[in-house]
Image 1 (spheres, rainbow, N blue to C red):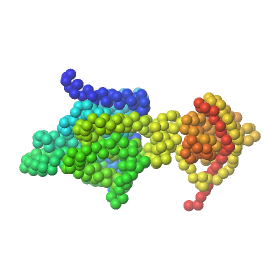
Image 2: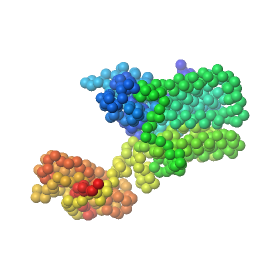
Image 3: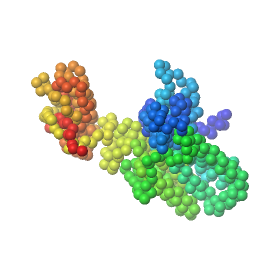
Image 4: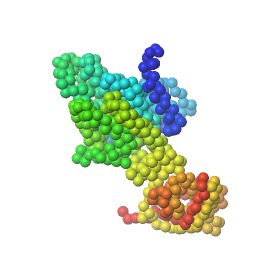
Length: 579
């Protein structure tokens, strides 16, 4: 028992370190099921709670009531006369034991279990951590087959968890499939590598089971079979082992059966939903193989793999060491695999993979990158090794800060570019939260119905001052107003933590009907630290009460005094444009 605990000590410590960082700095969240994560998971509540998975004899036109819940749940698309879960079922399969335990042991007072309450959300977090832990175990096993020293193995494990988007996909987006796929692919790599070293038939059987799991986690990840030549180590060993395997046809047949048996779980899920065992569930989504976004997916500021996960650029460059050591077979097979998966991933219609942190599609293949990095660190001389370790260590705080930014809405989850990236680079102050989420408004779609000016103000540090308020004879009618635009002249310094609040109340000022406060730097329309006229657009919902209202503009000055010039408030309504 003690020996077993000792063998997993490093992996346990790394996971606990990660949990500490989440709880003390990055920030945890209650809701783990967002976007794709909800679709991957919904197999479980569909089967065990709602009992609405079996729909093959209940087409939508004749049975609309059967699809009420499904139509309002993320991840379902139309297929023939049915609705099918777009996502593969492998993630739900790996979540199943944890879900069952929570489902059977959780009592929710005053409500029924729908599979999405807080206990289930937390369960998915612990489930993701478990598969990250298993990924570290198998990464160690893989690197040991290359005779990597224990210290370097631990360093690579630390990088996998803390220097990559695993920091988000084991926490905020734990419901996504990526850490589950990372486990399955890493385990597959280990058993294939073990087969090429020791030629044991059982390794092929386990690898076949894992490959089936890889397929039902994310079908595109079947590309990992193209990495097999690299794992063979040489062309002669590849040919030799495959020839011997083909001669042992019983193992091949058993392995094929195991692969198909695992895949059959997905085929059965499709059949129960639609009556078809095989189908393309991503209806309406496709690859554009004639227009791959090769450069953007690697180096673009929007989601570039090497921009948001620079440790992987170091790992990519480490392949040159294999060339320096004249291991050309390894170089060509690794580079060939990397080019192929990058071509496929960058050809997806949404090459940036939606609202997410970094290029999440590469997470599944992280072990592929750590193999050459570990070999370089293991074989290089002290000076280059220490330099590479130092550079790699620097990527840890960078990733943790960017994870914090993503978690706290400083780094935008989809609309990043060069200017935005450097505007918020390493910024962690509260005034940057939501800065890049400022909603653009096309003023041409609006017409002005009223305007007020408030002049200039200097607000002392820590003071709250009314910079504009309507008096009893100057009330505003909000009947048609759908947008209030406030403009202010200022330098918009990055360190300025001043906030501006817009309040709409009844004419007596006794009841607040609208209240919104934004940091002053959110008004900037150009670069920060630059004198300019900044604007902020406050969108309004129509008031039921059409009586006149009072408007107040407050300034909450921060650590330094704030000078506000040319404050102007415009009241606009949506134009009724033709067409």
